Image (cartoon, rainbow, N blue to C red):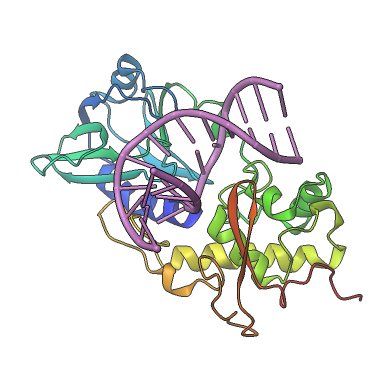
Length: 278
DNA sequence: CCACTCCTGCGT
DNA sequence: ACGCAGGAGTGG
């Protein structure tokens, strides 16, 4: 479900509902979340009786900090983090609940359980720092950083851009959109992009992510922010999910191919397999 | 670098 | 009944 713009919207709506409140107690289900249930004792130590200092994001990862540590949270495909009145009905597939000092409850619902919740003490674990540059950080995400990372791999550019160590936060939707805007065919080997193509690709990634955030995320089926509100970016997609429909630029039918067992949408006219010679 | 795996739900 | 879905780790 959630890529960077959705996770950023969750962060922005979650932060004012958590920051300054104290977590009274925690609960978690015993079902696996990304292959393991969160460790209950560690969760209690990291959160219980602690004030929430900040809600941070890098790529698709969220970090909720307390004075003694905190939790890292990834929403996977279907994760939802919300804050609701403590007496609100508990949804099916609720895997985490934390009672807050203001009478609300912070909850994680995740039907498919591809998400994760990693409590930690002290500094955040390595997955937080193993991420590549975040496209909302102009200091870190530069044309040169993108060029260097893509030159290093022979994988198809679409698959390389899904690698969170190359760029943090892109997923299937926003990669398709960025490649369409920059007119790059998704099957082209990353290392074979022309030098002149990196600036347009970089710009398209920055723009498409900024647009997604402005529109409060893409709600195709079940994504909602921490207040339970849907986003609006699904009305601004150019190619994702639009197989057979006209390309918004040239009206050719949008095509779909499979890459890494997932669908890739693109326009074969706007995104030629061989770039025009300069 | 590939295919497979972890899950539920929804649409065909 | 089957295939597909916004993700990503793992193991060959």
